[in-house]
Length: 433
Image 1: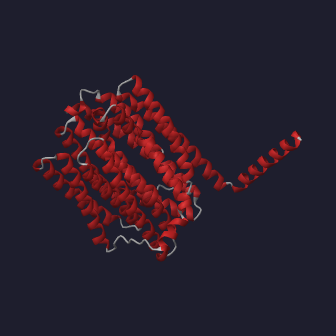
Image 2 (image 1 turned 30 degrees about the vertical axis):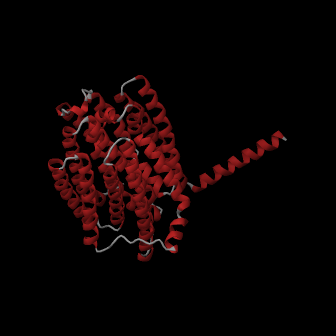
Image 3 (image 1 turned 120 degrees about the vertical axis):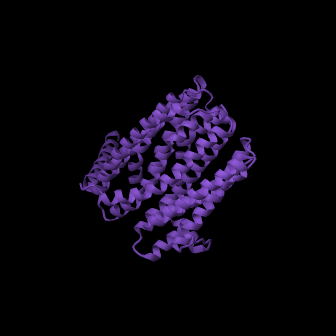
């Protein structure tokens, strides 16, 4: 199998844009870690968690389906039609996430709920547009837009921190404004606006896909429960201040999520095209190669973070053992990096239902174990329950992805296996009679 050098070039270009954003978010978290109280930083971390929830729903309901179906379309008319349908849906999802975030932050006692909602809505919408432009192979334009977002975010957030009275609220508004500027630069350079239509043809086109997308929506829900159950349970049971030390360490691992998202945006359209031409062997080979690369990269990055952690001092850490939290974080993130590829394979095959049930199982395992650990130990140990959940998703994702690929490559054996099952069932029924 020839190593996909062209994908490496595209990945480097995409990671460049993601790295800028990741560096900005990292620096902002460090600044707020020293500025805010444990309660304030915990609320900021919850706002970022809600941003991640918004991105996951956008990804599952609009961005990933748009990338897959636009890549499978054989003419520009089909690409444009899917672009309009999924763009309209993305706007609706972003607005719903903005309202939901504002309500949740208010319930947690944050007076900046509206500002947090604006941030989550704008971030979610920009995420969809980035993925749609990646599907159109306009990576350079997306990278320039990312640079504009990073510069604007740095300037606005700096002004908010130094001159505003309510730092948390001002920072959320600054992030929202930076995302709007990123969207503006994206559409101006591409000379292609985000086309919105609520007319009947658009609704029918989206409705035809809903049978698959409803499982994608369910998968997004279970993924959020499985991936964010740590934050939800710790903040809900012990309070935002108790979650602050975990958030302060976990934010250092955020670049891994950013890199994995960049890789998904790069690989998904490519693998969808290969699958359209029935090149399943190439798809499976690339899945294995990239999983090794990403797994080793995640392990190396986590090991480097362990050397940085002792240098971080903040009142938000509340004398927590950052080394222990860092080790637990590595055990969480390495499985995440390893199951990205089989999940991509299942998604391009349209097996959203399998993905949903995998993450549902992971969510059940995670919620149960984290709740048990919180009842008998301090919050940092809850990361172990989350690690078991991620490992469950890792094993199940590879098993079902391998099973689906094998069935595609061996249709005759699959058919004979089904016939044999029917014969055994008929024989057993006849024997009972």
